[in-house]
Length: 85
Image (cartoon, rainbow, N blue to C red; front, side, top):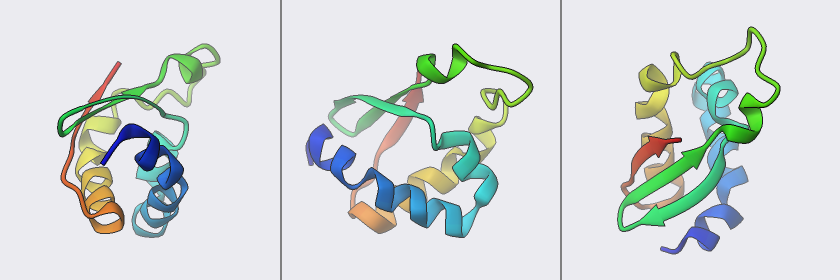
């Protein structure tokens, strides 16, 4: 699968994530899919950090990453590693 294909279905992933774990959805909904290198998807939060207030989730996301990875697998049928920048 290519990055463009993941981007085109990202809303499906987020909708499924929200149904499973709303906190995980809140933590990841503003991620920008920036790069796919093999099975590693890079999520970029630099745009959301420009307006960071008390709703910064960078410390929480590692605890929620497993739900995102599982949801991607369920929706897209692929197994990915997620990294952030």
